[in-house]
Image (cartoon, one colour):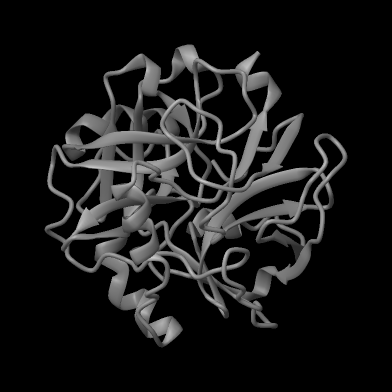
Length: 290
């Protein structure tokens, strides 16, 4: 969960597209952000909705946060092991958490972080993310989706383009039971994704987006919520639970004042050329892969 801290965190910022299983050499879609405490502890992620708001998970605004913490955006270079560069100070009090979110309940895991100073959007460096999905009928079970992650079979600290299929909600019941002993069921406010391929089992990070094709466009369809970061890859079922963005699209729009149409066209264009994903910050705990 977002409250788990890892003893050794690597953050790698890269630039350009990639094919699955290959390290990402470039950063054509720099709309992802990383949150850290001080210079070492990355605890959550999110995506740039617009210059004033970050779309993330509600659990990323947990009560243990200091009043002020760091956000990292764009393509600034970070030295491995030595901390994070060019932080932007953001405030816990500026989290807009969905009113139905509860710490003991996995539903409604969506939040916005309102920025006190608007981001300066620069093409190729700091950009708005793809538009959010607003169609609850999309994606259908069996549809393919993509997300930023780290291959369980690799020791690389560089993120990869990972793919999963949408599963039935029942399939993800074991993820909920493992991470939350109280809740026994999940609802249509969530998406279940999975893969049977060992080669395609990837870690991700709470708050990172999930992308899928809806109405012919590559859209943000989910926000990483449960099952994002297994302690050991051999314990990883290949299943993840995401917040279903379509169920919260009106709430997101009403709190931001816009639909968040950003780089969807660019993502779709890259997908057609075989370079599907996404700029991403690589965040890995050493103990999880060694």
